[in-house]
Amino acid sequence: MIQGAGSNVGKSLLVAGLCRAARRRGLSVVPFKPQNMSNNAAVTADDGEIGRAQALQALACGQEPHTDMNPVLLKPETDVGAQVVVQGRRLATLRARDYGTLKPQLLGKVLESFHRLKSAHDLVIVEGAGSPAEVNLRAGDIANMGFACAADVPVVLAGDIDRGGVIAQIIGTQAVLDPGDNAMIAGFLINKFRGDVSLFDDGYALIEQRTGWRAFGVLPFFPDAVKLPAEDALDLPRRARGEGLRVACLALSRIANFDDLDPLAQEPGVDLTLVAPGQPIPGDADLVILPGSKSTRGDLAFLRAQGWDIDLAAHVRRGGHVLGICGGYQMLGQAIRDPEGIEGPPGETPGLGLLDVVTEMTPDKRLSLVRAIHAATGAAMEGYEIHIGRSEGPDRARPFAHVGDVPEGAVSPDGRIMGSYLHGMFGQDAFRAAFLRGFGVQPGGQGYGAAVEATLDALADHMEAHLDLPGLLALAR
Image (tube, rainbow, N blue to C red; front, top):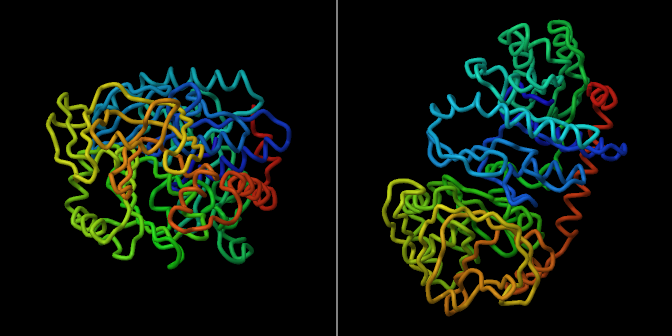
């Protein structure tokens, strides 16, 4: 199990690299994260959902994503509450304090999923969440040491030297953990080093001496990580190239499933901007994307608070294009109705009025992998739906795509405003190429899926060169 000496130390990337390295050794390997908090989810073949990072790790393993790989997923809807997804299915929406009382009851489900994976594969590589040094959260913990102790899984502690203070990160973690939890830690490693690694030799030796833990190496910063699907929207480029097709995506407060943007960010002919709160939509944007949201009505109010509704109206008057995906599609319509209060207080919110559709929130959540045909180009598409609500109206007569004989999404009469529930569409090279050609852009470079695979191999090579991988894999029991 890889645990972090802090948040965002690179645990997800480390697990992905270890998974690919183990797979290349001929092992049947799978990832596992007991509890994840993310609005960036992936739909699984068993029609559930898990964190997007675990889906990438499954790809590194050569495995299909499965709900057992991330049995508890928390999807924040407000600053104090989140939707709780257990083994791929929505259980409830709870405030943080209420979730704290539920956690001990979820350990059984977590262990059930873990043991299913353990019995079916040679190796399970586990990712912690946050840091075990948050000892105020230790009671009822299922994400870090609570899980490690219950499942008897050895822990390697990862520190992030890029943010500074890594010696204190690791030694301080040992200082605050109780003896039983400390006994689970088999060693440590240092991540994200920039420059001459030998300059840290004394610090590395000091950590070994003070903790008595085995050292598994210092991993230099891996710059190609940007070529992998981003786990956090903040990891997406704000302004990539300054030339090409100018695409602006709004950084909504509850942005969800923003991995739609990763393939576009890799295209040499596309300049992708993530528009931060308080910043205007660039006046030179060719295409504005309204991404998915975990709280559509709440994020529509957030959008208006930034003045983005005014910017969008001006963008459309200038002849610009708009694509709304999932929650963004719902926002483009005439109204969003939530009579049962599924996303918050019951009520109705006026939409942006750019598409003639109305959305009504419904209690049933749609989770499915989808194959479709893009109506405008005839290109085949693959993606997934992960949403509540149904959108109907006159603009549905001009669908964005067809799923079999069923129309999907909506397009305005002039074709410049588009809405679709299909996430992941740009990951398909043929569709992405056809879509971009409609804007006069010739796609180039390596196919997106092939580029991700090559980057995972490069990550494994990088870890093989700088870490004691045989020692790490030998910890498994």
